[in-house]
Length: 148
Figure 1: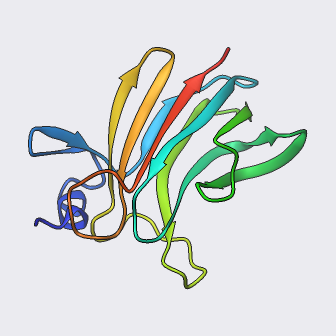
Figure 2: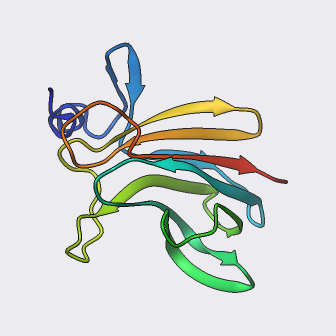
């Protein structure tokens, strides 16, 4: 099994092709200030706690609460579908998968970590691999739908 971490180091963090699929460390999605989206969890099959991390230069409004810069939605505690409003000046949302091995640390971007990003109607679907060096891409699966 190749180390995705090594492939991403060689590509300087850019997407790479593995087994005829484009994989990436992070997805960057153009967004407008005030744009709304929904994150919908489809499943999680990893050995550890799985989540999605969203980052922007501004913040997020979720359930009438404002959260600055970054938010993590954990599969085991977040609702199946979460509605979010984005505040941004630069117009970009970064999306990556994260996991917690039980040590309370949010892990990402190492060892087997990678995502397959599929375009869908009004958004994207993410098939994620966590830090285990395998290539099943089923540790976390979620959709991001633009709602406005």
